[in-house]
Image 1 (cartoon, helix red, strand yellow):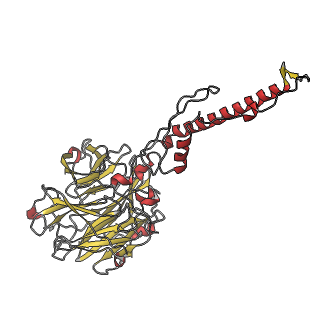
Image 2 (cartoon, helix red, strand yellow):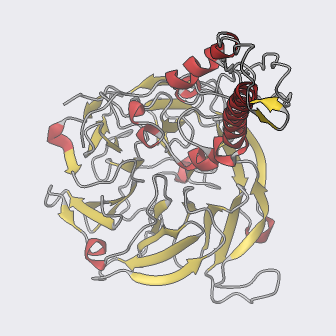
Image 3 (tube, rainbow, N blue to C red):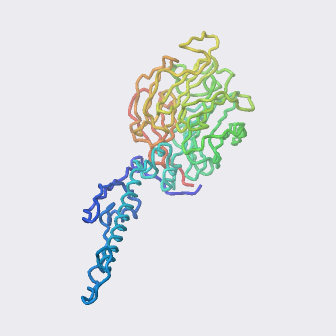
Length: 502
């Protein structure tokens, strides 16, 4: 992918048209007075602006006939031939004048009516200077306009994914962020225990065949002393790909999903998310923040790790359709599970999933820009009722309205989504199946994200013994903003990650 100019901020990258109304000058008395016609002209079109300065829709076009008064009179001694009672010369002059007048009127009508058609075309009615109609809701960065491609830093519209790096190391706070570089490659940076960031250069490349603005999803776990990382993305032929690494090999290799030829929706913004299935994240020495309904005294104890572990994965196969796949540790291939309809394939997916016998949750955006929360109780020993079915996906009674049409969704201790106004909001969820509720919300009130920004969220234990909410998103296009706040309360602080240019 070639380097191209980067975008400006949220308010600058998508700026409204400056509407310019063209006045209609008084028309000559020989022409019919047409109603005034106004239309908007993009300031990027100098030809239209030049025309607007010279002419109105009609009325400023004049036709002169200088020859009418310069023709000499006929000699009095000769009797001129007459046509319709008029002298031949006079008749011809009047005929010429009439024809010229008709031509002028036709030109005026053509200009006026042509302008009106342009003004009335629905594709021209937009509040965005870079793309017509509502399609801009599903575009980001350079897909809006080539001028918005990044020349430095991260890709404008980069996918973002997080995975823990602390398995078995005894260190708190280590984290890996996967992102798309402005060159198009997928790279990683690592948060060290002293809160510094390392990596992001050409030495930390995971893949070079990703499509622009690909969604990214990462799952990490530790089993039998081996830490493993799975990274999922969409390649430039719109196919799902899986890369796998571990502390046993330290080499990125193709996962089985890559060879299964899963075709993803061909669009700039598409939804895709993988979610861990299992009790916590594997071995007992994994360090993590307190899970929902778990206090600090048990936060780092995972004695009931279990062996039935794996992943769920959702991806958009169409504008309104998602496919759900599943994989268990030890399987050679992924298994098709079900199709989800009437969902916004351009928006992200959120998930909260643990192991066998627990209740799993998935969050999706429907066709009305409402984030829905679905649940599935997998406890097959429980009694199924109409209000609480067992082993069946059920829509809860709680939803979040007016999310951005291509919002990302994420959950760790809070459920996050981007609103139509560009702000990222976290929601304090109470997970109780059909009685799931939202117990308040908070805004990441530092800066708005670019419209449709990818985001990734987590909660990290810190060296002081507490825990912090962490949100990664983009506010300018070439940046990656790292916002953090105390788990319980406090003000948000943020810093932009330094992304190497090469």
